[in-house]
Image (tube, rainbow, N blue to C red; front, top):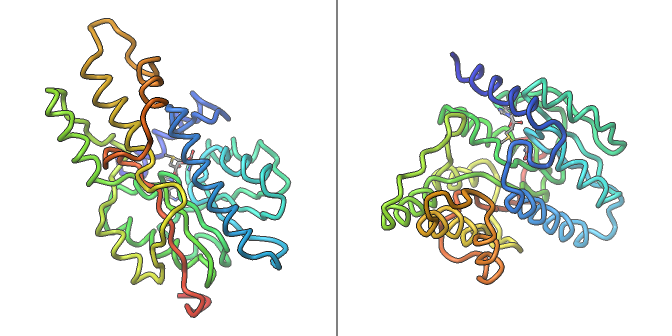
Length: 272
Ligand SMILES: C[S@@+](CC[C@H](N)C(=O)[O-])C[C@H]1O[C@@H](n2cnc3c(N)ncnc32)[C@H](O)[C@@H]1O
């Protein structure tokens, strides 16, 4: 099976099993909610810093079933959104939302011309990790960067190898088996982030810490797994919830999913 067939088959099944649910493509509701809040806060700041601008163009690359755009369009009346999606069954779901402020298009971010025009805000939420070939990930990041307007931002929610290695070090201390990346993923590394400058994007500090999910990952993927008795609740336990509420977020580097923000310089050419 080719890589494209692997991805298309995986997300066809995901679409059929989950429909329009927020948990479609992300079964952990706390992770989904945290990702959404990170994106919302950064958009709020971006809009607040531009009081004279009446509308903002936003693109969600690999928009899945359109959950994020349904949330963002309800929250921000000044957004004009485009969702681009590779898997036909997920695109169908997104289209079925009939959102007034969003259009949904078929597209493949590995292609330089996957969408016309440029955007104030571009988002990927666990999408570049679905490109299973290293070179294609770089090409996609370059394409995505080229779609950001000068002065615009790219909000990246992607999974990284370095924190996965740290999470696995913590697990091996507790004699837990290592977590492997799922077959449909190829995590990014800090090398990808270095390349973003070449693509005209500078990384900026984020309002929600980049490692916000770290404590959650340590509690659910290390601590809870280590203390769970045989037959105890496997996922979403009160134990995990208790410790997440009792402890501060963003401790350590145990969450593969990181929140990152990039801005294109105002001097950058309209098209790279
Ligand atoms: C983990 S899901 C995330 C979906 C959505 N961003 C969300 O948060 O629910 C990854 C998405 O990327 C899409 N995708 C995979 N390869 C793509 C490509 N080459 N171009 C655009 N989207 C792609 C998949 O179809 C899937 O919808």
